[in-house]
Amino acid sequence: MKLFETQELENGKLLVTFKGKPNMRKYYNEFMSLMYKLPEEPELDIVSRGLIIDPRYLSYVEDIDVKAFPKKKTMKEKMATLVKTNKKKEVTGWESIGQGMKLQPYDYQKQIVKFIVDAHGDNSHDTLIIAPCGAGKTPSLLAAYLECHNRGIIEGPGMIVVKASLKTQWAKEVKKFTDLVPKVIKTYKDCVGREEAMLARREKKLETAFGEGKREIEEEIKDLKRIIKDKFKKQFEGADLYILNYETLNDEKVQKAMLKVAPQFVASDETQYVKGAGNKRSKSLAKFNSAKVKIGATATPVQRDPRDIYGIFKFVHPELFKTAKDFNALYVRYGYGYQVIGAKNEKQLNQKIDPYMFILTKEEVSSHLPKLVVSQRYCDFSPEQAEANQAMMDELEELNDKIMAISRGKSEEALKNNQEYLETQMAVQARQTFLQELTLSEELLKSAPSEIAKKLITGAPSEKLEVLKDMVEEIIESGEKVCIFSRFAKMQEIITEAIHSVPALKNVGIAYIRGELSSERRYEEAYDKFRDNDEYKVLLCSDAGAEGLNLSLCKYMIEMEPAVSYAIQTQRHGRLERADSVHDTVFVTQLITEGSWDEIMMKSIAKKEKYDGSIIHGLIEAE
Image 1 (spheres, rainbow, N blue to C red):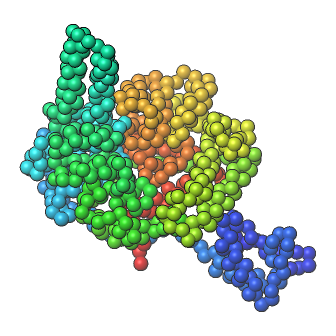
Image 2 (tube, rainbow, N blue to C red):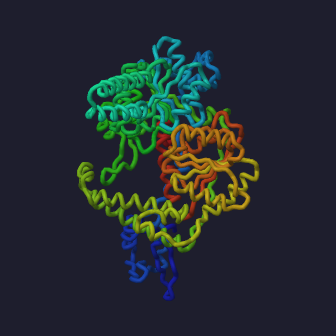
Image 3 (cartoon, rainbow, N blue to C red):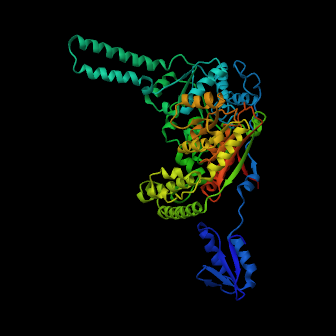
């Protein structure tokens, strides 16, 4: 038996008690109803809330247990039964692609380019490139732009839209691989903000000026206006490739200027950041839907659920799906309160988008990538932490039950305006964050201005930090460097203090990547320090470093906690899995606290991995 246990009583009878978790009450009720159908009705034991039965009926109980709790396949067992339904795209005649580039693309990158230039899917060149992190999407996009020009598919400059943190790196990559002239576009404010401030001061001074002084200020104002106009306009001249981040493209003045440039080649790097079709990024990109060649490139297109596919294709091939409402009705599965709980009709969705996708698997580029070895290092709570953790887990379950009760019978629109529903959701999210922080360091909880967080503080040290110190010391003593990920930026300060508390690591150099750093600063931290300066042995990254960084010289990575999604986990690991890695094998260690929120996040990641398999790669269970 799995979820019930038996105990022999002094009178020879058996006490059957439930040992499952509280959130399994649905199965508990089913078991109890079946138990009361035994040939002799069981007796209820008030103290244990168990049932007393005659030993003769033990086999009946075991059968009931199997019926009430059918064994579910593990995610690994399910994945093992999947079969691929969409066929590999076969392209020919790609050998000569990239000849004019300073560095030759790999063969698989040339094949990507050939697929783009060959008309496909409604006779278009629109393409979603899905390739593993480190496979080299940048040279693929550069080669595609050049090849589209050479074949007369497009004319004029192209536009590449990237994350803000990758603009500097992209400009350097363009010069590294080609003779093309890149130009990084700034928002109107960033470009001419200084001059605008000077203009405002002159206009204010003009209000009280008179005579010759007034005429001088008027001339200064006229010159400033000309300088502002010319400086902003000059951004959009003299380049082959204009590089913008998504937020810059949201700037109305930048949009207007780029629409005048009218790029016929538009590529969205890390296109998963487009997300829902209703947000600003998607709407801004959609204004360039008339481009002859539109390309999205990503390793992980599904970040949350199937709705991400609609957002991406609203840019890549906008004619494919009519409306978000129709898409959701066909492919999205909802639960209580219109919470998205899964996908449906995955095979149909895969077949719809397949003509526009070129997918490279790790196996296909494995000869260029190092072998990735991912392992888990398990840590323990102190008894006090375990007790606090369980108490808050119980609170979470009660709140989730409350959400289900509030949601019952209400529309999605009604829930958006239901204050009790919104407050309960916020309470759930807060507790989830605090539970994750408890696995890392109670110092995080101490800095949180919340009485709820303080309930988890026990004064016990963090076992993860102790394990981390040992691992970092061992790695550095072996002559290697290490990258450490945690989504909590505050952990960088805590980890730094922990590392420097080890006598052998007291003076070790540590570089940092986090959200508020400019793209120039990130480049300095990742490359000038961590890669090129031997005094720097450790790179601490928030998830701001999960994309774009090329850590080809780094052999080891430590994840302080599971990523919030399968996509971010893949991106983290992709920093080591580089086509130009100097290592044959790279190692990722995930620090997991037993019985904690870590284990719930690992299950969530496995669920998102299933979306990637069914919707993108066309993997379905064998019949």
